[in-house]
Image 1 (cartoon, rainbow, N blue to C red):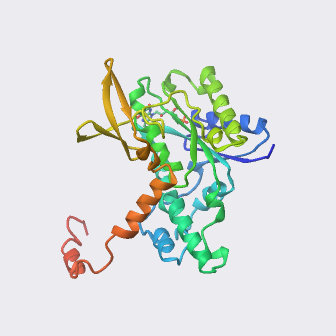
Image 2 (cartoon, rainbow, N blue to C red):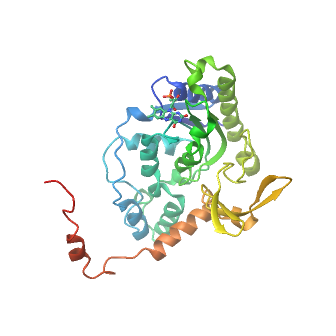
Image 3 (cartoon, rainbow, N blue to C red):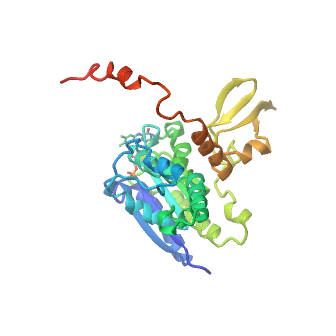
Length: 321
Ligand SMILES: Cc1cc2nc3c(=O)[nH]c(=O)nc-3n(C[C@H](O)[C@H](O)[C@H](O)COP(=O)(O)O)c2cc1C
């Protein structure tokens, strides 16, 4: 069996519920013969994305390789991700969503690691006979699997409603195939998850699922969904839907694909046509659709000739000296 690298990242407290759950899953991966690594995200000093978009502009113009100009601890997560073959990401639920720091890290991974930008830039660079050291990291294109874990104190499941769907923001841009996801709610009823044996057992299972996917022989068994529920969306397996107000059309807000809602035997059914499934943003085709949109639709400088003067009107509005 080929030894692979499994990375676990927790956005929770030191030795809190999330951390122990992720570590339990990692231990199973180690038992299966893989190398494990753990990062506690809140120990790292990671700055918010400033929106300079130099990562994307660099890749589009062929003058960069998707790097961020901010100098902080993000490189620790970046290198660990590049080394990894599988990731297990866990976040507590704060205000119905993953933590603020989780989103900070997602924004830093975001467009700069988008495989559709990176691949196009890499291929164009190779065609232009550039040295590989000037191109996006080749390890960006490795096929990876992932599992997501979310932990909420609330006894009522709907206090975790945006947690798992939002967690796909971590894996989406790198095209990591999520093969399992687990939502632990009601954590407040236990002093610690260590007192909740079924949940700890489920984490063992999650680790085994990752190990199994890592040793799969074909693409279908590698990416097979191993979560507890199929979910309403056949791609991300979440249960969330957006109403479009175009007849019976609904959208999966995670994948950005549309389906058709119907009611049979007083039950809601949603069918997603094949061509919609194929353009999920969790897949390369969906990401390429968006990166092409950015390349072709984004207005450049000069569209508003007196923009500088117009902006000046707003410079000090409401700001205290
Ligand atoms: C600021 C804050 C907001 C929270 N909001 C929610 C929430 O919306 N839903 C929920 O289920 N739990 C909420 N919780 C509870 C945490 O999710 C819970 O304590 C969790 O076990 C923390 O994970 P940890 O032990 O890994 O740090 C919140 C906790 C904090 C500190």
